[in-house]
Image: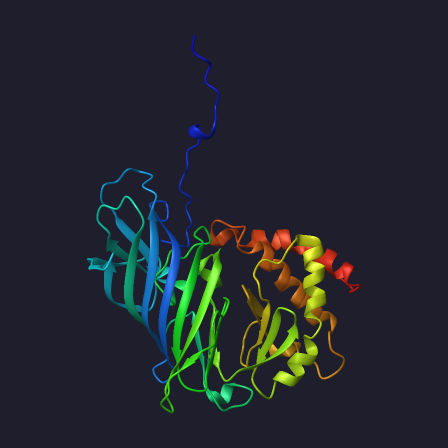
Length: 354
């Protein structure tokens, strides 16, 4: 006598999630890891190099041979290789100009993990890259570069599945001009490697071991120095700004301890703060490992104002929820919904007016 069927995990069907802001196809192939190799050119205002995508085929529809589709915008694709062999690719028009184009790569018949190496250049029109002339910085000595990939600008930084549904780890090697400090939303496993010749570029290395969506890939380059403000925190700023920034944010350990008492262990390893130049047009961005903040938080009066404390509370709390929630760009607000109650609880915990 056969046993009656009981519904279980084998009966579940994985349906594709339609993100109207992305034209990629992660329901067929999903990005697991990314390796960046970039060179920063302030004169041309471009990043050049290559990106290596480590892909896993999901094959939900049992297609024998389909194209890998990646989001791109204002990017010049030079060549594509699949598993170290040249691959055919085409660039198709997107469904809307704001969404950019679609890079379609013939990956052939793939039943296991494979790598896609794309050599490319960004363009000066890339919306993710914000290039500042020296006169737009605080010290007015060196140009500055920062990225803003939220919500769908990562596709103008590198070819990707530009949707929060896809999360990946990454490593990066960034070549920058001499005297320029490079930071990313990742750990710095080694010190920058400088060439022996004077006026030679330097190489900067980064590792992010926690999977993140594409919009949390962040890059900043400029004349920056740092100071220790906590057991796992540095504050970065231009040399003339650093003393005030260090004074303003020297209680970050207290803020992180409060967050951990409410949300659990802070898993990103480091919580650094980057004070952007005066031309930074945003309030901030809670990137993993490196929070971007506006210099307007630096007060000439008493440090740790309510506005500054609220900003750090919000950014650190969202660090817990940003990568966990949201399958589409339209759902990014879900993380704010989850984090906001904790921001208020946090403010009460710290005896701030919230």
